[in-house]
Amino acid sequence: MSKAAAFAAFDSTAPLAPFSFERRAPGPRDVQIDILYCGVCHSDLHTVKSEWQGTVYPCVPGHEIVGRVSAVGAEVDGFAVGSLAGVGCMVDSCRTCASCSAGLEQYCDRSATIYTYNTKDPHGAGPVTYGGYSSQIVVDHAFCLRISDGVDLAATAPLLCAGVTTWSPLKHWGAGKGKKVGVVGLGGLGHMGVKLSHAFGAETVVFTGSPSKVEDAQRLGADVVVITSDAAAYKAHAASFDLIIDTVSASHDLDAYTQLLRRDGALVMVGVPEHPHPSPGIGKLINKRRTIAGSLIGGIRETQDMLDFCAAHGVVSDIELIPIQRINEAYARMVKSDVKYRFVIDMASLTAG
Ligand code: NAP
Ligand code: ZN
Ligand code: ZN
Image 1 (cartoon, helix red, strand yellow):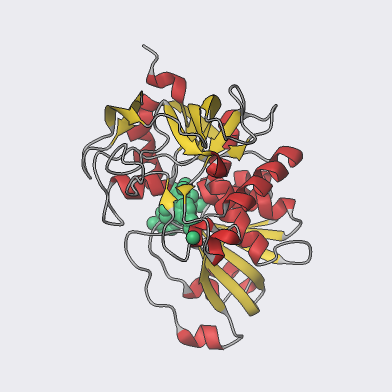
Image 2 (cartoon, rainbow, N blue to C red):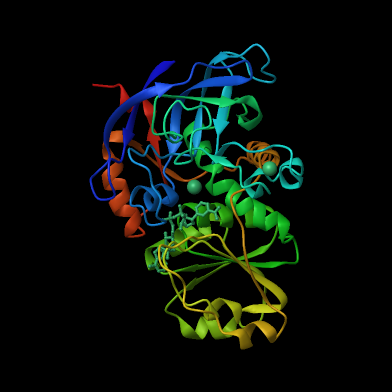
């Protein structure tokens, strides 16, 4: 066992505050990682505020983890003390069902996915798993990701969730040259969606409610930027998209986007708002055989593929590095869509001062 320093939420309304707990001693297949950086995902905030119900307190969020290996078990493959390593949204699953065997552990057919935080801890070190707002983590090597030497580690951390959550649907729905892709919401997920869609060669259109983000959207790779209040622009893009990825963290009208899809186009929901969206109009779906789909993070194999692609192509997140003591301020800004474009916690701040 090792004592981890952390920040935790103690109930759904109080600010996050210091906390300490025990990590399990690494078993034969475990990797222990000293956490250097952890990204701040809107899912952390939804969970801390129990907007999805079922949060167990204290809650230590964080699933965009990059660090350095400090211990390995005897049977660990591919990681040694001193290697860089990443941990994303999952730390285990059943590993044998059809979905796990296909490398899609997030869709485990036995619903046995163990998320990095707020899932019953199968090792019993705590009541639930504790995430990356902490000094170290112990994870089975099968759920550890390799991080290439020479990348910007802080700016790579958000790839572990925001990167793969947009990579996975872009790949699954075939974004690339000759395809027109929309990204709704320019936050953590959205800005990675724009960078990846652009890198895949798709014509990329951003829909943002924040006029202050227009220039950034272009710099990030958008060919066109539409402000969500511009009804004429929505008309001009009618029935023209192959794929739209909706990353918005609040409920909103979906018809505005389904009617932008061409025949057989898909609106893929990745945002998970606290309150339901208004029911979409069925007429807009049957007309042109359009689809509304959902997509959850990405499997371990595709996360590694994404990290390797990003390292090779110089793709990282645009970040604002913060000490952990500013986490509550970061959450307040995230609620106001004032994020450019991912907060990342410098974990050295946990023990500094
Ligand atoms: P984020 O950084 O806060 O970005 C969300 C963006 O949505 C905002 O920047 C804003 O973009 C837009 N937005 C926010 N409130 C809005 C409102 N009331 N009306 C219209 N637009 C609004 O959040 P994130 O970390 O990217 O996460 C986005 C959502 O995805 C969250 O619900 C999160 O829980 C979910 N998520 C899902 C998965 C998955 O596997 N499916 C994985 C990770 C996160 P503009 O300023 O451009 O309008
Ligand atoms: Zn996330
Ligand atoms: Zn499974």
